[in-house]
Length: 420
Image (cartoon, rainbow, N blue to C red):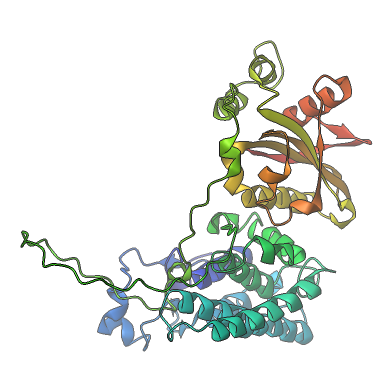
């Protein structure tokens, strides 16, 4: 299919990702202007004559049709691929798609963005009561989304729609604003939905790993400036002019910087087992064999400094398509990012569609799994059992999980992922 026109957006812009995802699923071809420079190109008369506010995303169709506002462009793209079902298959479906998008936009997204602007000092002078009001409204909206998706895979019907793409994209952005581990623990189904959608094969490459906030950021009042003696004159430096920021142009500008918190695992006694060396051995050697990675592991493993665990998803009855289950593993691993230097994992999907399970093995720092895995808000959806490598049954399970030939109750390994 030849290109239908030019889309103007930025790589970090969430609505731009939504449009690109719709295009990928619907098979819509488009161009990106390689000469576009944000805050320059969109300020020129040539641009504002076509798009009055100079905002992106913007669409310039080869047929002369022009659009601005991201959701309008996303809906237009979806309408160009009616067989994709992105707007539903009936007028009732289409109304429901709009319903869930508008709720998310007006209640969840709006209030999250206001919280971010308050914390960054870009709104009114900070007010705790105003902050609480925005937070309560955002929480109420997310609770409505959580309740609805708790009994289904998609928000409307049995296939992915624009509502799913938009909601998943916006929930991911909120993870970098104020959806910390405590908030995410209250929304397990919404996060399961987010990972299912963002890991769809056609669109997964558009999205970066989801940020993990241990604690939601709080307002810190600016320090009062102290009077200081005039410094000695110094040679003038070339002044860099800051680029102006449009709040609705760059989503990343709404994400406060996360404070660095020391992990108690760093205080454990030094271990002779180097996890990074193990990860390299596992990547570069055959798993089994005389010179395999398992042989390397047994020669180097420090059972005092590290431990080995079996992990199982507690709710296999919720699993449907095996590729979706594998995406779920990828999402779980993404949420474990904060523990990367303490953890290795090999987890897979065993069985067939509507009759599968998720199981595998972990190698982690210390003797307790919880301090390593609880960085993932959905860690309690998994069962963790410590393995004894002196026990032949446990050892066989561990080796099969790493070799991707694990079989449980007649269910054979179909696909899997490694956390390295």
